[in-house]
Amino acid sequence: MKAIAVTPGQPNSVHQRDIPAPTLDMVPDGRGIRVKVLKVGVDATDREINEALYGNAPPGDDFLVLGHECFGRVEEVGANVKSVKPGDYVTATVRRPGGSIYDKIGTYDMTSEETYYERGINLLHGYLTEEFVDSDEYIVRVPTGLKHLHVLMEPMSCAAKAIQQAYECQRRMKVWSPQRAFVLGAGQIGLLATLVLKLKGLEVFTLARAPGPHLKSEIVEGMEATYVSTRQTSLLDLADQVGKADLIIDATGSSQIAFEAMQALGLNGTLVWTSITGGKKLTEVPSDQINIEWVLGNKLLLGSVNANSDHFESGIKDLALGEVMYPGVLQKILTSPVDGLDGYQEMMRLLVEDKDALKVYVNVADE
Ligand code: BGC
Ligand code: ZN
Image: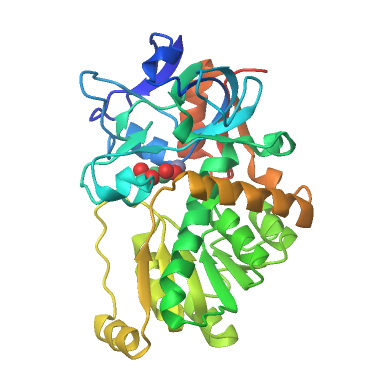
């Protein structure tokens, strides 16, 4: 069957190749699920893997099948699978467990081992192919009523985890009740984080560079959050005008902004970093000022990567609620479809060149 892969370590190596079709017996104990891939989303991670900034092939292979945001339909299940049946729509988690205690209890997104296993990213093949087989542990059902949001499940799981982690850490405050949030970046993670925070009742300011109106500002405002162009109002000016934030989610992909955000966080607040920055940028920061404010304000900086199936499930619930609260808004994120696996060059071109492509995804197959 067809697959879209890269040769890790070799820039711009994206190509199509033939790989063997998977079979149910690849998963022991009758827990296998065979999924027909319908759609796969791609993002900056896929672009950077193709730039050879990171990403490794599975042991024994010299290629890595791309794609970590999948949406598909169950074709066949093993004898002991209870969670889904043929015909159900599903998505799948990205990480697979290593050997640490955190991996063993289903929280593989919190592994304490340096080596991590992520389908389509590191040491495991991804979903940009026709079918895959995996254990029921990693397959999450998508309600039929959300199938039009298909590839948003994985990015949503990352937004859901980031915010859940912040609340988890803030139990240190006993009565934490955040009022104001800044979301930095209006890409897919920023927009989905905006939704989660709005559904929690916060006043949300979502910041990105370009002055609106445009699609991103329309989506932000469609969720009753406030869009702020940093060309018109800088992050620090916003903090002066409306007050510092109790919670900041950085999803800009800029380490410079991630550090700048430290100056916009209020007392007892939490700043969550969610972007992977593959480069080697150096940034000067007012370290004395940040240090004193951080200590005197009991502030917290939290990194959040990936997600486990619990975060997928809570993300899916928030997408469902989002559809009811703000009908039709979320699907506006899905801007840029590519036709079939054969369109992989166009997929990369959109990722690299099209600044208006909010979400690039491949229509791998019709149902
Ligand atoms: C993915 C995450 C992954 C991270 C680091 C992101 O693009 O959505 O699932 O953990 O990259 O590889
Ligand atoms: Zn991703």
